[in-house]
Length: 125
Ligand SMILES: [Zn+2]
Image (cartoon, rainbow, N blue to C red; front, side, top):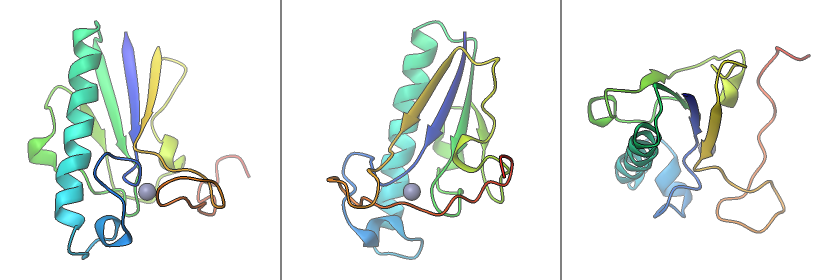
């Protein structure tokens, strides 16, 4: 079983303010630890459920938020930008499972830090 994970930051447990999600914010380092912890929980769960491989895509802001040296080394990581498929970079038909963690609601919808970003991928233009 091949598992794909895309992880954003706004929807991670314990994150609720702009200061926590913007690089340089006072709360940002703690948010990196929380995000990495949620990623590791999902990676561990995937392997316990029989995954043969896990690919995780860092999908928030600069797309370089996860703490690499604290991330479960069994997972392969995609980070940085630009990415052709942005928050879905790396997903393919070869994956059996896809998880989208830490996502937020769309602009105008109820939810913590709800917003909508302009599409940055050019693959489907
Ligand atoms: Zn985000």
